[in-house]
Image (cartoon, rainbow, N blue to C red; front, side):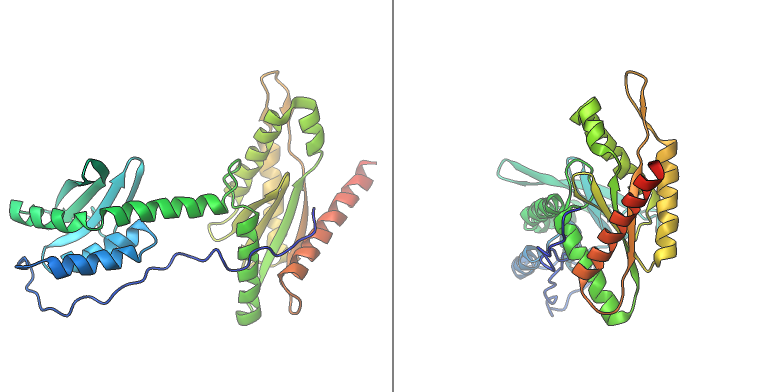
Length: 311
């Protein structure tokens, strides 16, 4: 595995929502304001500072809930949908859900789902539609931002996180250990004899092997774990709150899964994926580069031991 270099530490941060304070204007529940100009402007500014669609919907909910019996919102565009916490929750027997189209000129900007304690009147629906139009572009733009952020952190072939994401996550986990003493485990992996698979069956089959391995890795890991394609046939996993014993149990489960899920070719041949592992716990002293080198060295020793056994 190539030597580790920190190319990115904290530039891939988690999205943050910048919430503007709600207006101090007194309002009466279920009574629409006579003039919504200030409310619309306030909502538009707040939505522009959001980096994900859910935060935009929450800004809308915070303001509209003061005037209408709204329980939740959803926004749908093509195959994507996000919703607030209580959308479609059956809290009232007479709850109602209505959908309105968000547009600007001839541009469709998705549909807004409105879940309320009762069906809204035409006047209420008209007022809400006018208000929601002010955040339509913010909803779409925040979705596009999230897609771009995901693509920047994701390997397109395996859909695992990529090297850039690995660098940032490793730095975060090392910082958490240095500050809070929460131990994590780093597992370095690569596929044995992967070059011979490409040479024998071609790169298309090689890609299928990589995707199968990634599927097994995602199946075995917990929701709190992180899986990465480091590059080529090299993979890494970061296991928070896990020691070396726990990491070894994970690698055993992964090997068992791979033995049960050989890649079947049209010719009837079966390719069983075999891997080498290097495990390293976070330790006091050093930095994330030192942590990675220990896992990389353990991987090298594991591969060398397997070659001696095979000989």
